Image 1 (cartoon, rainbow, N blue to C red):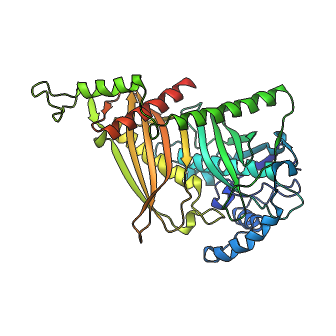
Image 2: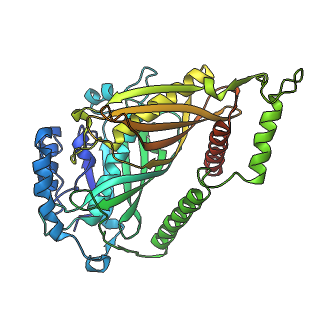
Image 3: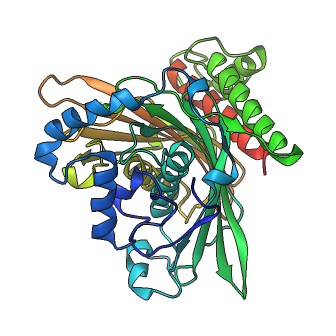
Length: 427
């Protein structure tokens, strides 16, 4: 059993791509945190290849670990929240050599790098919950299913002050795990909160083909019961939001009224025609509030299961969304929240990743941005959605209103409004 809390004083290990998947340690001993040693150790534990070209053989060998999978959840020993407690340090203040990787031109920390770190930490927490000390390698493939919520508690992340991440498992289903993480930064003589994040991870078999059972959670005391209950509430909220998705059901009566009002506000009073539309003052057509990007998925960005690292996808989506908000507002946006990032499909190495950012809703100084990512198979020319990201930004002055023209844009507008309202509830 892991000794809680496991303290990992880290320099480069947290941001290592290979660090995104793997057990925390063996026999309660933290692994060597040198980047090369850590990558090699994680590959040994999971059974991944050090050479991308050899991944098929490595995955075939990993298939033999299926015999160690539990036939039911009741076969697995219950774990406590303390078993998965982790504390990780990112010494930006005491190790200046790290800063350049995290620094942006505003002399603050690149939030996209923080997203990568959070994704790595969430996987790490889940492996600590499911780790079997009797085995040399974990038979589970733990991957990110959903970023439920990231709430910012501080607008500025200093590039020359140490950062501390803490977290543990807060809820467990049969094959899914919720991990809650907190980030603080040392400034003015004390650590102060920067953000709270909730990730949902899923356990798969060694070949990442089907769901696998995870250890049940043993609650100790009323405080842990309260935390677990919040996880149940989060699950129900996600189900309710999915059920009420505008891709499945019609807008509510109130939302239909909003869409019709937007339409009436754009009518040309001279022609009074359905086709003739005029942009209201201090507004912008949604069509003109887009930004697109393309990434070629190279092996360098792989995780140890030879898929594209989820943290990399989040970083690229965030940076495109931020740039879109910046160009739209004409000033530097500040992140308020990340909401409901859904990982629908893994991204294979060699894919062409298409990213499309859309300002879909504005209110006062707030900008709601949706980033849609899809892969294009260059041989078949088929498109497949992989992720949808939702970001809420704040700027220093009121921004133009975005106005939909088509029915599809109206649905994006309403979806953005829903996410914005959910974000504002927790502020």
